[in-house]
Image (cartoon, rainbow, N blue to C red; front, side):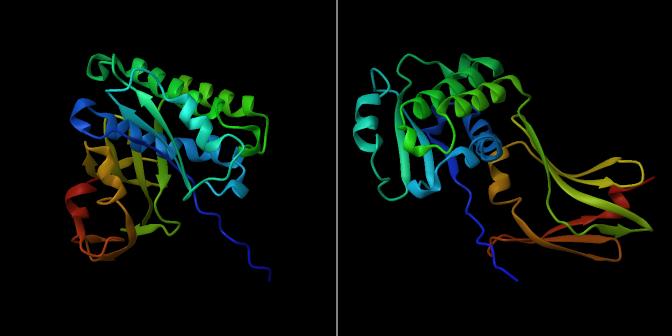
Length: 232
């Protein structure tokens, strides 16, 4: 059987420095990191070896540093696997923005980055990447993922284990297959924490106690008593 090489996901992210200047930005950043993988990743030329593509916020810049960005990347190899664009936030009051204004700002800045990369960074016409970003702007920023292929079997019912993410919160939940009813195990109001605290590698059920083991070895086990959670 032929072995297929699994390609590592490109990391689309944002550096903000002092995160306190941008209330809630970590939640938007985390969700966008997830949403941009299916929207953008397969349109990027992997031969350029870009592993991380990022926006870097600077409140002391007068304007986005496009000239330096082009000097570094236009038609050139990626140094160290990182492509980054310095963005000016000098006259931006992020905390006063509405949800849609925050989305608009982030999408516009991602468009600036991709518009200023040379064509050799793309497997498709660059306009397709910009169109994908515009679609993201219109969509509800929400993502539900199946954490394990294996189903949980409990009291003769089968459950999917999912992580449901929005910019407000993330929810670790069970979804019963027979009626698609949701049972919330845990909520994360700091959505970015799912990258560590919600990064589970396996689960086990002993009587009524459901236990998750985290991929980060130093984090404790998460345990839930299903008698208290599934009551119907």
